[in-house]
Length: 226
Image: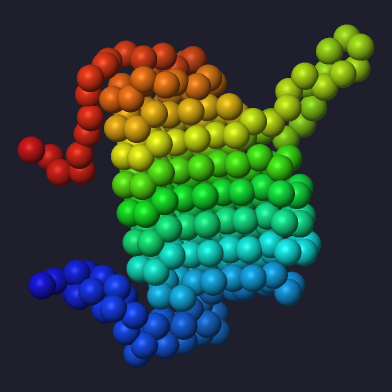
């Protein structure tokens, strides 16, 4: 059994020594920086290195699942009643998770690989939900709002924020952009540089282009090259 599998087994069996060692490592001076201002952080059994977590406001909660690894990440919450959740055994490199305003949620499943320089932002009380066993290449951006207002000729705002939902086992390619209201069905692929602006419902598809469209059906993917 390799080291990684040994660590997984120790975490699954609630090994107290390992959890204590991880807690000490996460709180070493000059390793990570946590500024919680009375808000809740639960990272028991996770490994954090070079990660900054800043939370302002009230009744906010961050949960990082057992066995997850965060290297060089940033988590920022401003506002009240926001939630950020990372599942068990997620691998996160240079991942930014941001919320603004109140009542937002970023929810990530288990066994997700965030490969680097990824920005995920939720605003205006909306949700970004990501399923299990997903893979995100570098420089991916996911946002459920525009941050600024677009108005019609009568001065009415016409660009409200909308939830983003990404199903289980989705592979998102390099520099893809997923905008508000997007839904990516399970077992699908989002191509390099795709700009996704609308929801898709059919699973097992490849989505690519600007604006993105279905370019292939009845496909799936796996990490291993065969």
